[in-house]
Image 1 (cartoon, rainbow, N blue to C red):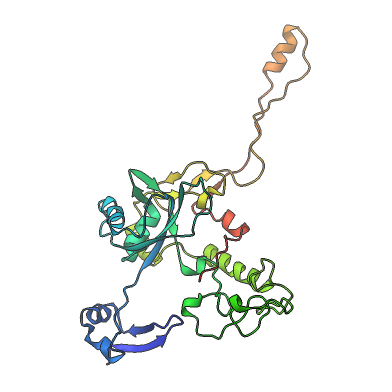
Image 2: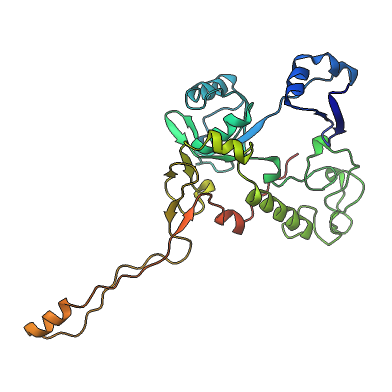
Length: 317
């Protein structure tokens, strides 16, 4: 098959096939008979583009197809061509009084996902802040081999105990032997928060997030499609101290605000010692008022808090 450049087996068991171009890929998607030559159960996997929606009410049920369809219909006019595959919560809430959380939504199209990232997503007449999400943005640790970067469901390595680093499942460990990390060989469990291997994995996650362009399409495509759109500028989970979302128009034109540091001082003016004489009052009136000044900076992507704080780690199984 001349249209196929090559193929590569991925860690999750899927096979990624490289075609000569976009047109070839579209043709191969419609002619699905060729997949049977790989395996009788093989089928084309649809690409997806993940967007993280903040402050979604916990009453939203991502397992309910009707609510997924309602979310899609709500944004049909707002995001033309939107198709949502599925949704899932970023993490399970353990706070009893918590009413909202961050929801991961899988979009069919890259352009629609980028519009959602730029403009936000509507739900129940409320505009929700959004950002791009990738698998490398979250810390994952395998419960089978204790390595980072994948989960036990797709792990092909042998088992490693998280307590003693032995070649058995952590759940079957007698815990009679000395505690030993299977990743760094130090005297702690494999998931210890101060493990140097874990800290390095966290650092990689932070690097992935801070260096990501923030869009799925190329910069050229963004300039053509999103130049006239409104852009939501705000902190992830409002960690930067912003109580509301700031909006700037158009994309690329920044909204100015003070950088991090001490709060702005109240305007001060110099008052000299005066008497009740008219001459002294006249002199004071001529003294110019001196206001304190602090330079502003342009903010188009709020990454200050991302660069200084490691993301919440989560071990997935």
